[in-house]
Image (cartoon, one colour):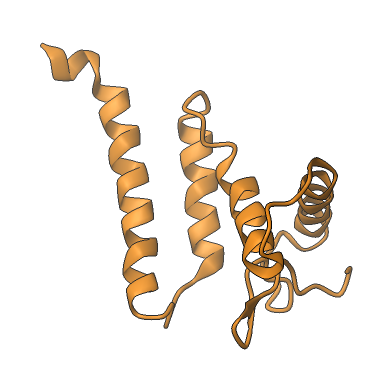
Length: 119
């Protein structure tokens, strides 16, 4: 049967759809009650569960899009490297769970790439 052969693909598609559906839902209510740490934890679970499904670029693309929102341009390759490196440094030091280390915090209408004492 077709669905038995494609079971893994169906599971990953469903997992990603559920994960992004929750993001869309919170987006519709201006992120009220959104738990960003849980959002990224779910991505890590998806990446660990389905390591060969191309999920490794979600986090870096988010950082690049946040940069674009703030700067009104896509980051250069050097800036992309800096953004990912900065986030990895923060993630190691704080496991991105500290309340003052939020990679997508808002300051008025401006998204901040990070708010962190290491910065």
